[in-house]
Image (cartoon, rainbow, N blue to C red; front, side, top):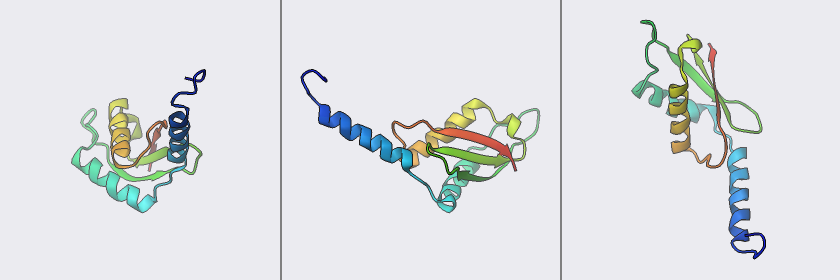
Length: 107
């Protein structure tokens, strides 16, 4: 509470932690190595009999965490699969309190 100054230090510590998470950068080689294994274990579902193949991924050099995945048919990657990728990123790296943007582009 701001009036009684209770747990004010915890709030500031959490704010600093979120700021550190926001600045976090993942090397492309490590990110690719992990995510391509995840994608191979659970590939994007086929749409209209066509399979989406994700070949490469990287973190964009922005202030907030943004990740781009290069695929042969990005229009067929639906929102649930993007959420799956985001959840796997959050499981492996600490991005708590920070929004993650995921983009799928043509390779």
